[in-house]
Length: 109
Length: 118
Image (cartoon, rainbow over all chains, first blue to last red; front, side):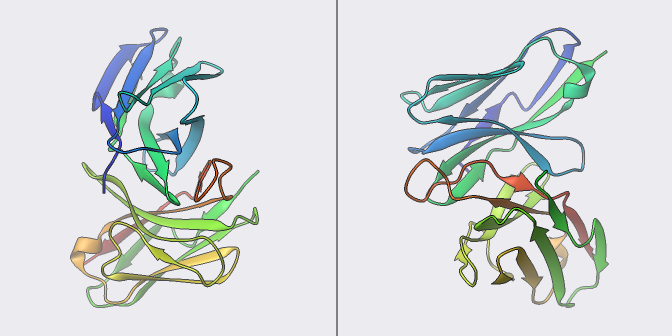
């Protein structure tokens, strides 16, 4: 069953701007993960936040998790053209990762 | 570097054929997964395995089977391919999670196999 749902479906920004993507989910989770997929390729893991954490940073990435609202956000600061990709959130529970449909990010040079 | 390889990047098969998709990982991961990815539907889990010879159904197992005879190899089998199985197939592997219980942490994905059934 589909759990994570990203918002917006598509986002277009200028290079140097920040990009924010949101993810909502329905049931309790062990952790929430964000992945990036370049066109037609496999997914690459970006960051994992556990259910008892509220915020995590990795380089230009910042992830927040609000378990009371069952939502997460991914912020990419100072975006680059190379950040152009689809971004997926995935909620982890019972041996399974359940992926959302993704946000397609376009960063215009 | 962790490597997950898939036997083919592109595959074209005819309706009714038996199709084997192979996935191999080199990190001694216990967990292995098969997903399919379709436009507008995202990634959907077909089957996963948390140990050799163990398998569990995911969200969409109908029309598929799997085999895990060795730890590093996880095969997806389409017993009789149909046109609605045309899709991108992604394999992934991971260690058991540190979240406790039946957890999964980071998954490592292969490059994908784009299967067309005509």
